[in-house]
Length: 247
Image 1 (spheres, rainbow, N blue to C red):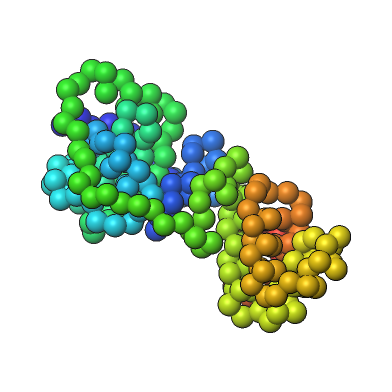
Image 2 (image 1 turned 120 degrees about the horizontal axis):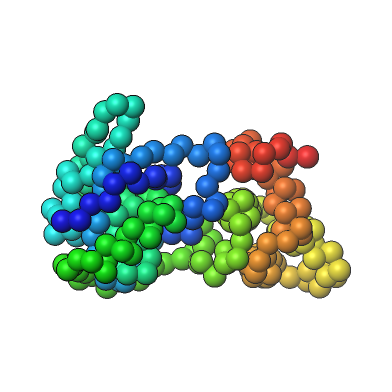
């Protein structure tokens, strides 16, 4: 067994998509950073790594048995033993996991560049048992769990705001009238007013959704702010991510 010492972790809890587990350069001063006094390192196949990174389902029993009580959290002057906490790598990517005593990867973190380098060095210096996933798991992306392609190239704040925009758009589809859907499509594309008025509700929503999926621009920002205005839950998410209240 190989262990890595003094591992800084910035846990992202309950994230089913790896793009929401931020890389070190996107960590913020108000993130809660913890230190693992030691963490066991396991070598996994790319298929299993993808499953760990992008799912919240049960981990393989063989892997859980290997990592059981092999990692410790440093808290003040104490070492706290963790039931199922480990660092996984497929030789290219690296992620830290803590199941919080369950069998699913509830908390996930990237590592600092220094710790990542230590992982790569250990891979070269040791013989490894490689853990695999026997299941053939296909990830199902949708508007509330968007494809990574929708978020490529965006900053942490832009990713969060775009997912908030998707949440607001999903609610619009569920509760908005035909006129409301056409109105918001017109807000996005005012030059298409006449054409949009000829669309039915589903056509207008689908075309709006299709057009906002690429990138993040000032138009996306303005549409998101307008859609969440007056909705307390969405406004709170806006304020948490944007740092200011909705105008």
